[in-house]
Image (cartoon, rainbow, N blue to C red; front, top):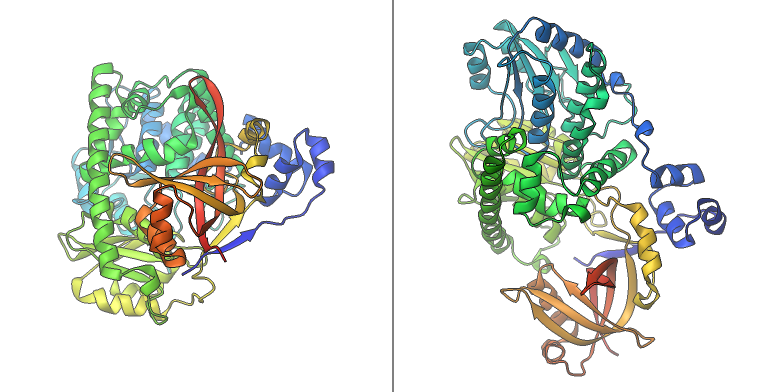
Length: 595
């Protein structure tokens, strides 16, 4: 279905704000498009200030949790950190383990992360039983636990103290806080913490700040280096880069850039394995390169590799672990691509979906590795712009992940059909679930019967910050735009648009000729190149459908053709042979046949 292009039009005094802030009206317009309507809000957004971070002691149960941890540390009790297998869980474990080991007696703090396939998400009875057998006195969860009421109760009944730290939603439909000794989660109904949109690693980092400030001879300033892991988890777990999230990510990236790398050997080794330049390290590289590589261990083998990478102080070991994760991620990419193609073959092309087609896609791929189900669901969601569940065959029944679109609360929708599920969890935009094979079709029917999405909501809205010819973009504007970084969810890179571009030539790129580069000419005669790194096969089909096969073939040969291109693009600064240059990246396109 065709996407809807819209221009953001939030109004403020562009010229007046421009003078007060000392920036261009263009930047003011982009800031207004981010929902910032006062000079004060814009100034706070542009200037990351450590003093703007919220008081960690305001997190629910933070002080009580610190009291329990302090008592355990003082008496040499055994503490076990229980994390999760994704990037947020790995960074959470790293922060807690590194922080607690500095305060604890040797050998009294250890950690465990679940195996994605053997254990599933979060706590399970086997993990609790093992902790009890190992003589653990205090269980400290991170990035999980809020939905593990039965397991937390089991641990308490076995005599263990349980401190839950999490950032996920408290289960509804009769759900309540787990029966833990302390529950530190900003999603609690009684939360007074000013910003609830933080990830599990930030919750862990802030709790350790409170602990250090309440421990004689220590101060929370000692934990500032660990903000690198909080920043990586915030971007990797796709948190909104607003409020203090933006500040923490900006500070974490700045530390790495200014130090020409990370002081943590494992993080430095991972950046080197991914061939990332620490001097230009960005949120984009976290989200699309480092993050997926870090997650690959938990997806295909075990997240223990990633945790050991981040807590090890041996150069040779960290390099070996980083190399293993990089190789696993290469395998993961191949598996993902195969599964995506299988899903598309099962559903059919987007333009062939009938009006009465399912509004929520439930795709069963029995041979898909369950660890990549979430990635595949995300790709299918983008392709069809519909909430998508991808299910695979597991040891016991079916298991999978879901990814949603704005306007569809995936977690609450699953609650409405919970009778067909054996286990589920997540939030508005993403979820995990398990069910028996015989409940697959009933679940598909029920989830669609409860879906209230309208046809308009199933048309993706693409927002443009400023309609601007590419010829108007200059180096000074792009240097100023860097003030808006880091970019990510909730603070996407600014988008520009231009219409009626003549296609001079289309070139294929990449080892497998899987990408495209357009040579374009504006109405004013300006020539520029724009690469496209998306699905080139779909783009080609769209072009042929709109303008014909002959026009496409002529464009490939650099001949005069009947195609015009409308584009939404993102400009950025780059360098070539030591000279600064402007790069244009194609985000969205529409082909129009010349009249």
